Length: 305
Image (cartoon, rainbow, N blue to C red; front, side, top):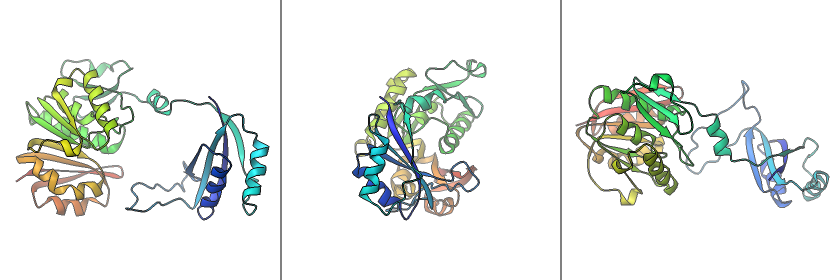
């Protein structure tokens, strides 16, 4: 069904008052965006500290109302609720309801990583260079889980797995994908020659997406997925963890004990500038640690002593 959308610029200091008023008059949802998005003044908020909710100095508030709501009556109600706020800049439009996840998937295109690895949307044809017998093709529908290959953190891990396969390090190996999301890394490892893969995630929807994608790629019998508390305690020759730096720090002991002596680990989800502390942290267990950058993001990989 369609909705009536109200948009309004405001300052960070007034944002709580505006949001409170919008919710009081029946807003179904309120979204906050950087008013300078897509300009030279855009300010990214990538990984807030624990307990922090940073906002931009200037915001655009967007509120959705039922499409039969009357714009003039809404404005009157908002002005009555908080007469000290300026609602003269508010604009209205009608927007159609849509499945935003599916709309995003329409923009999702095949991607190549390294020499052999291809991530291809389940509903699109193979690109020509992925049609050779040696190609490692993952057909993917991320669903509600993170991991499509478009984000640099995932791309860094896929390139690493592709290089490991070139070195023969994945052949017949069992790979642990910690924080598996859509299962993209575990599935890529299987397609690149791993015998089995284990995916771990604290989001049940991620486990569902991973299993569904494994079935779609005809490797469902080679992938096992677990919540963290149910994960078997064992060691692996290859471990990849694409999560946030704070989680990599907190889980360092756990991840280190999952890597067999001489095994490989890749850590991703690290913002540039966060890698030094993690290099020191993981240096207690790993050697040959290398940090690789793509855009604002870093990957750390090394070998277990």
